[in-house]
Amino acid sequence: MSIAARRAIAYAGLGLTALYFFVVAWYYMTGLDAVFILWEGMIALSALYMLLFFIAILESVGAQRQGWKIVSLVCAVCTLAITSTAHYANMTADGAFIADFLAEDALAWGVFTGLAFLFASLSLPAQSKGIGRVKYTCLVCGCLCFAGFIGHILGVTPLWFVAVAGYGPGTAVVCGELLVCYKREVVAGQK
Image (tube, rainbow, N blue to C red; front, side, top):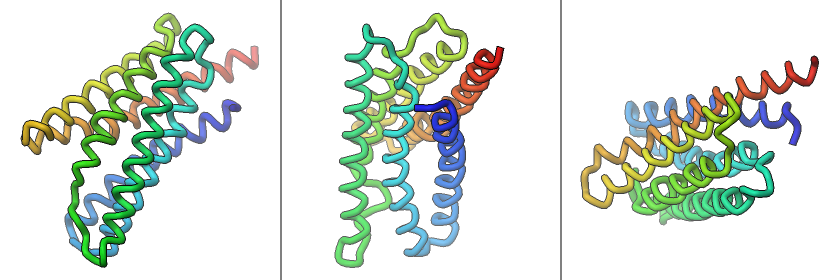
């Protein structure tokens, strides 16, 4: 994958994060069913984006860490499959929405996205200055996703938003770090 493609994926992550939170705020301000359907679609699109995000991050992982990379990508695929299925069903459930939050979200975004972040962290080298930051930010994002999942299991709903911080703004932070890394790669390639 070219640096331009990886950069486009990072910029898309920043834009998608902002758009997602705009749609969520819009829904809570208006309560419109059409905005709820848009929100559901954004969730499914976000899961697809996360798979592309992990592919871009892990593309250059060395042979000695391929196992961690594969597990990370499998977890991202699980997030996509669970989320897409659950939210498609939520949008098409006889014209009545099941809920704003589905238990499947906790499994998909808390467990599988958390695992994808953690295994991505294990895949990335710590020595490189820029990628080292991405490695540790992925570790933090994974831990936040798991904390939110535990909050859901314990019935402490506000704790779920810790997971949202992990896969939402946390992804945006990783995208920013990646853009800095890609800029360094371009500069180094021009010398």
